[in-house]
Image (cartoon, rainbow, N blue to C red; front, side, top):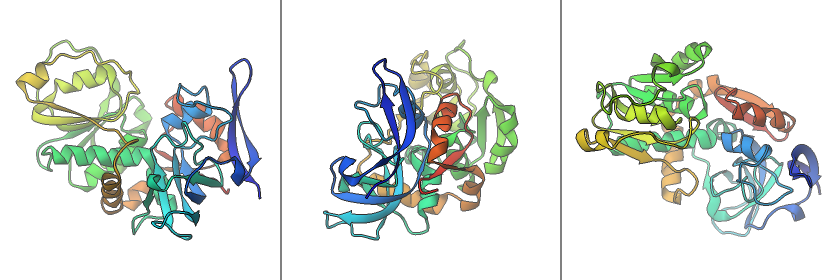
Length: 330
């Protein structure tokens, strides 16, 4: 029996194209569990995999989609049975193996996490890898001593996927949130998520002139990297932490070690791809308990498989606000 999938192909000249095709279970990669996919989403990595690949896709034809939420259809693993609601993020799914932009997916059982009580598959993909990463960042900051009342927490790229969820979670937990954006038209959106201060990107995205500035931030979730991260490090309070989750502003870090040596600032790397199961489960349970569903609803933009080629191009240009939920059966 065939079903729909967004298939990316590469021609002899190295150009890629994506279109909806009919595929079968025999086309899917090996794995113990077949999932009837209900929803997926669009992340920056998805944009790369839909388009030129960005070095992430090893073999073509390819089905992108690094996030999957759906129902177990069949399982060769005792941990899962038909009818179980599950979510998949990470493990290079959608990159070096076929992912969630199809009506069915076959994955290794170790990749699955049971959907927490209180979350629907639609909610899970409104969160997706971006929101999961945001939750990991908040957890890391709190594990390193951040508590409400310490002072404002900075979120860079606050109108994007990770930043939107981080802002909503932090605000719901009682933190004062300052959101950085390069899009003035996003200010009301960010305030709606709970940001109490809007910081213009140009005010903070410049090369470090002094290694230390005023101690402005009790914590930071940084989705930008580059010069902005370097600048922020010099603005952190004594002993405060920055959770680095992205590199939209570049992979370089033109910083000095002075903030680490004189203020004890912590730079925490957040990887969502290879997180162990127990930490994945903890993060998803925290999402279910800490992320207000009414705030989540304001971030969502619906889409179908046919919308993905354009959305993939848009997200690479920084033109996608909030979260996209892809109904693969729509």
